[in-house]
Amino acid sequence: MSKKYNAKPLRIRKSYSLFNSYVYLSGVKACYKHDSRVRKIFDEMPDGFDLVIGVLDRHHAALITKLDGELQCKIVVDYISSNNSLQIMFKNLASEEIVLGNRISFFQAYTQGRLITVGDNLLAVKYIKMMMIVQSYLASIRQRKESLPESLPLEVAPAVVKSRVMFRGLI
Amino acid sequence: MNKFYQFANKVKIVTGKDSINELAKEMVLFGARNILVVSDRNIKKLGYIDVIKKIVSTNTRLRINATYVNVPRGSSMDTIEEAYTLFKDNSCDSIIACGGGSVINTAKCLKLMVATKTKKLSQLCGTGYARKQDDIPFGVVATTVGGGSDIDETASIIDERNMTRHEFSSEIMQPDFCILDPTFVKSLPEDRFLLGGIELLINSVEAYLNKRYNPISNNYALFSIKILSNIFDDFVVSGKLDENKCIELQECSAMSGMALASSLGGLSHALTNAICACSQAYHNLVLAVVFPVCLAERLDENREDCATLLRYTVPQKEWSAIDKNKRAGYFVEKSCTFIKAVLEKYGLAHRLKDMGVERESLEHIAELACNDSVLLTSAKWYEKSDMMKILEMCW
Image 1 (spheres, rainbow over the protein chains, first blue to last red):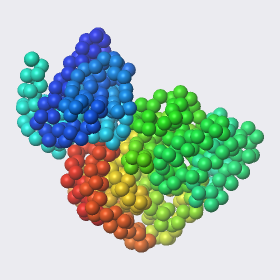
Image 2: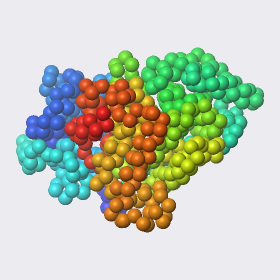
Image 3: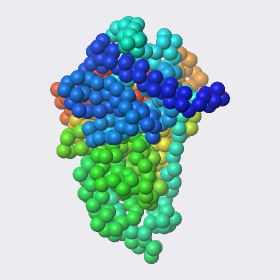
Image 4: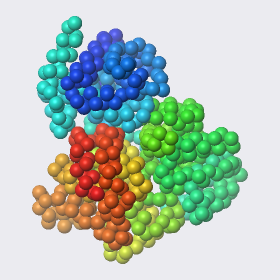
């Protein structure tokens, strides 16, 4: 890890993490509209099920839940785990920054032991794959070449998803 | 190769002829007093439980409080919770597992429950999340070769109520020590023994080809492949394996287990797990059928690594005589021919349809395989259609 990274104050790292989580949640919403694979995964998601993506032992997390058939994405503070949930947690802030900053893929993060899952592992794999699809849209061309599998197909142009994420950010 | 990786293996390996005599000493060293022995009925019939009881009785500090021998083939959640009740009711403080993959997986999950003070196993689903609250001595006496479950930190358990399979992964589950005594694998029929050897070879190759590999697991995998190719060459000449070869095979089992624990496996493991979840077929037999097809399918992706592996499986002279561009293909061909020859020699099924896998279930198997955690370590993105293509070829 570089000295420069360590020099960042914790509150800036936390804000950066919050921003990344927000971008990813917007990405999930955009992909839900445009990518059939992501839509299929969330259509199969049972009502009241929580998908939590966050950092282990940190206060905020990205929560994706389905209520009355509608997908809801929000950032929550102090999530209390329920039986009907799946948590995909990064081991630390540094790991989250690397993955959500698209420097490595979700697959690489899993292989490097940066991810912890709490809940059914088969479901966890499904959602990690879904996050990887979202990542493939949000990553830059160089990042996609370096860290994502070449054989991962995109259903729409990444610009479609990115513009939607930006538009959501502006409003 | 990964620039960032984690490698941990804390299992003490006790191997060699009569190494079972070390059992009592090891249990005492790890602080055991009241032991629960976990095993299955076949092992009991073979008299191995009596051997363990006899050895434990030589040490006055140790006592076997209970014996659980109801582990079925393919461990289930109910079985583990039953064993947990027995463990608590008899005030046990340590576990000895004597058997193959199912027995060891049961004991591993039992240890996970006790160490985390959790009464419901389903609450511990997931990878690497469980936090240790208690430590209990846990020893394994392996009676099979191949799976590597005596070394690794994962267990796949069937949930009979919901007809699903749950995966557990935590460093807490790893045994403290593992005894590899050749007398305990003697009862295995020759074909099962050799299939175990083939499974070892496949595990090592997959561990090497996996994206998750690191220099430490790589070395275990390569060394294991080197010894295995010597053992198989001897077996082809003489037709049987002596005791020394048995010990070597068990050592390979430990090494490939360590390599696989770190690198998880590959496409053939994902497919095999899915097939075994949907049928009653033997894990190592399915792996032997699926692996050659997967290896051939991924040849372009792994051309360089396959060429390196050839160097460890053929003599130096033969290796240098083969054209540089043909080495990978030669390795694949050699491996496939050997596996096919073994299956044919013992009259074992070499198609999925001969193992009772129905054609209608292939789609479900493909879907399960797509969602196997093993594939998260793969360099390629696999869709259901890719899986169906391979499954059709194996069927």
